[in-house]
Image 1 (cartoon, one colour):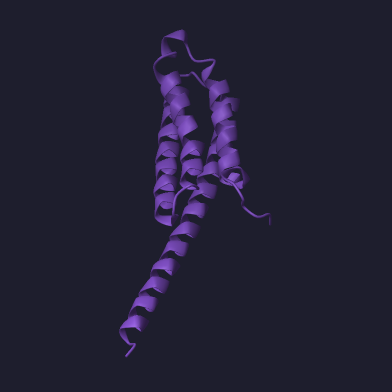
Image 2 (cartoon, helix red, strand yellow; image 1 turned 90 degrees about the vertical axis):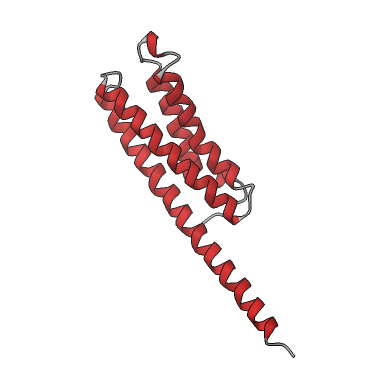
Length: 139
């Protein structure tokens, strides 16, 4: 496994970028009346998913966790918007299948990263508690 030196090294960020790129392609075929409606909103939401992952890497653990939660919330919003577009017949079956596969991977990887950071925060919090209680026992 490679070292993680930047958000660009995170597989969840890389796939979220692929997903955003895919969404831009899918929304090109939306009807013209959706240009400033569903298409615009879907694109903004797609960009927010990897953006929140990237932003989180520049924060301490608790802030990173918060940004991943935001990313997952945007991810759920994105899936909802694309499902709606599919129900409105704006999305081809092939595009929907590709979207579902890639979106599922993004969600699973981001959830995995979130669980890992939550475990780290729990360990850090426990370590601080141990240090504080050992100080209290000093003469």
